[in-house]
Length: 176
Image (cartoon, rainbow, N blue to C red; front, side, top):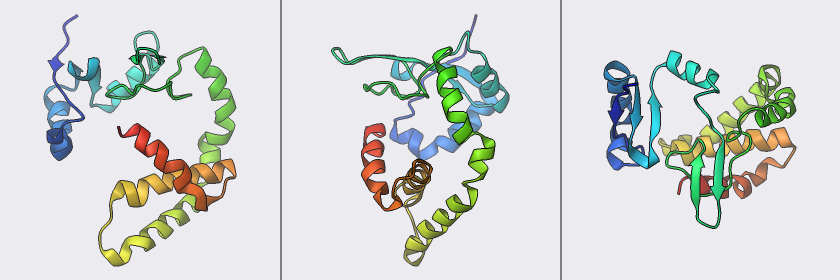
């Protein structure tokens, strides 16, 4: 059927400067569209559409195929596609996904996640205390990158002081 077509380049400096206004405009004027950029991808801006997409496994897939010899990427969740092996479990579809879900849910489901709330909040306090005197912070470098790493290391039982050893390479890889 007919689908609105746009050219949304999420990597452009213009998008970085006006991503919120772009999202607001798309939500109003074109809430679901096909972007021709980065090999083509859907852009959904409304909650109800996103939920429908996530639940429609017959038409929307996250699985990824990567050929290291040619660097060809098909599918996946990254825009633009990253020329690396798939990110498990995010880039898997059913029935393979069901196996990962069964392993992860006891540790990452709502009840388990709630058990980390107090510790995660204390990590937030520590990270903000480290930059409060500066009066400014880089949200990614000073907060979200270390916080995500610290919560993950806590979950895995690794020393929190080692967060940079794990987070920096992953952050560099995913922000190529």
